[in-house]
Image 1: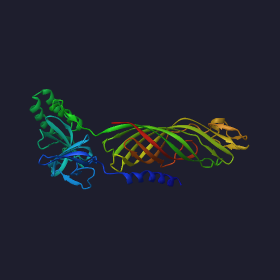
Image 2 (image 1 turned 30 degrees about the vertical axis):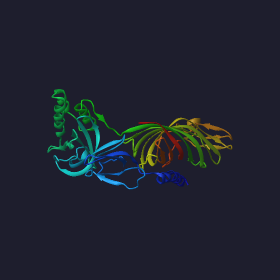
Image 3 (image 1 turned 180 degrees about the horizontal axis):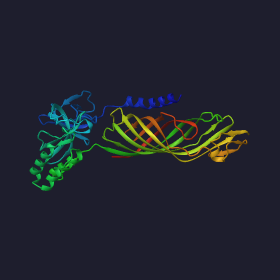
Image 4 (image 1 turned 60 degrees about the vertical axis):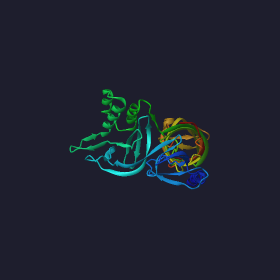
Length: 424
């Protein structure tokens, strides 16, 4: 029953997104090999690897599309989003990060025909990025000339020490001399420059005399929301206690922050969320009932994935882990008839006796000690609309425990919404 409920909720949310989602065509300009600029629409996919081709059409009403490669056009730019330059030539294949760096300098190259993403541009030079399954490589284009790779090598020598070779530094020095003159300060800084985007952008900005525009697609946003949580609670303990399962519905307040590498596509999102709810069930037993009240604060790091690249409707799935902290709590067992006995080791915490027989209506307060922090993996699905708000359903994957000394299971399923307060 629990799994059916979760499955139905997730399915009802995801199906409309797939039905109504459309391809993400955005206003763009392509430049053909002969220099002719043509306005139209490009299918924007937020490429994680350098694209070999793009899909283009002239207007929204036109059904026919055209696939264009780096041999067909010089460049394309998606209005207000990204710009790409066609490149046909060679790129190095060496690995220079992580544990897989080679044991000798790898100077091999491969031939490619791809589009390089413009990450910095100015009046003198442009910095471009190439990315494949091996690494990210950077190129520089001097006055719109053919891009040239900024090469960097890291490898082990015969004594198992890591050696670096950085030809890219000499290229940067040459560009600094050409456009800014011979300043020893710049040359000493380039001599220890790192091969990463922020470091390279710093020197490109200097070469362009601080007139560089750095282009980033990263973004983030705040959100706040609310949901209704259905909780199925079971409790079993020592032989003296036999409780019946119960269910409750409680409101939940959510707030959090999203981070994404591409704010225009938002394909993959890292979400940091916090929520507050109150859990206060009454669980009936054969000779007593158990009641507790807990204010539960949860912190939930999550990873979300959007299946469809659409500006209007985005169906997504997510997985996360809830770190649940009982902020305040109380519990008690109330006898429903006289002669109910609490077991040794349980009531002793409250009464100081080995055994205690209760009278009908008598309650033992907080006999089971403090509640523990617990962790709950969960899965969720939802629909994001127009980058304004989302409808979302979620469910815990495993049982957990709020009460020590008992096998205490809480399965939680919730449906709610989040509203995006800020996006950048």
